[in-house]
Image (tube, rainbow, N blue to C red):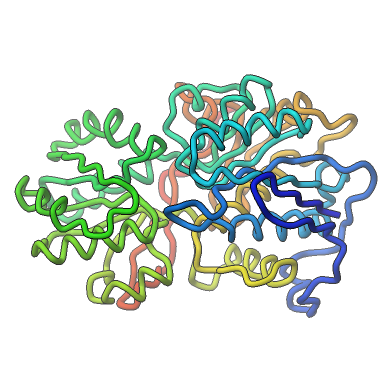
Length: 403
């Protein structure tokens, strides 16, 4: 029932194939069959695809598999099958804007935007057209103030609150934030973080590094020179590998913490377990250990997808976004339009966010009133073992959102 067309490259998939995994165990995880019927609802999905710095084609495959699962087991959207159309930005600002415009022209009812460094460029045409958008996160003030955008992460938790807490726990006095130099990552690090670190009595330094920098030794020397005893790394796995290798090269012996996208199988292969052991990371998703969230994601990927990398955080985020959108629109009836989807999401009751290890979300604009697009308070953290694998995840600060 799920149709996939890629604006920037991809394949068509009508979603009618027999699931690859039809075991009783899989059926138990996926839940009872509840097939969507009737007129399809067109939902846009924007990913970076095979961008120059990291390959997000895995996100495309997850979006396809998730739509099939939702159509087969969750009744799609209001009983209507989800028909997705994918556009790839290739991490290019102009292509991202073009993707947003294409979605408007195609008449989609809503758009999901995956992890991307060019979120805002894709989002603006959609916001101008009042098409509801669900994303994992952004620090762009205009996006966070939008009345038709729904954000599934409190990013100050992931990139500011957590490293401050780690510094307090370890007794560290100076933190350098090593950030990939793309607009989506910089606002929190350069505009929001400084006063919060100052309030906590912790020194703060921002170190911006260009994407694709293979040898970061010269940049990491600045960490030694400024006297930092802790670093927090924000970037994808290849960026983080280069940063950690650079830190080792300059003899850094302090605390290393990072966002969850840093840690993939590629990181575990490239970085010694002794370096990764006891690293505290903010977690976008509870990837890795056996848990109901991971079991559901893995079962959907294996049943409805093919060759999906289950170690990739960004792909699990795509599952969370699309499944979260479906959960937020439960109970919708009548005509399904951008306006009715938006009003239904705003009226939703507090609900568990799929694949989140128990985080609750509610999109009534009251989680953080100053940034009404945010639907979640708090977040997840975990500590890595000597193999770089996450231990149990902790839900922190996920307090109820007021009526």
